[in-house]
Length: 100
Image: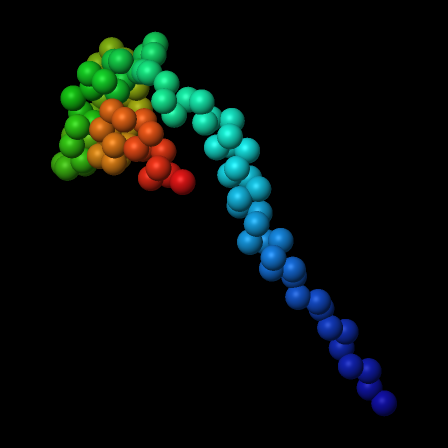
């Protein structure tokens, strides 16, 4: 007489579905007061007056960096700033809506 192999219980899917929200909710709450904050410190040179983030195409233009700014030699940062600018220009609240 052979024994049947033990069955493995299925993982609880209701817990797995809520896990991303349990991680995302505290992050959004922590940053919620910054969504309407003005640009400060290095934001002016990196975002407000940066002409390279105004267009996404050609992509190498969006990845160019201003020579003397905090984003110089950081093309991926400039590309993400260009993506954010494409979604909401200089309105921070519009950009955060695209993320959530």
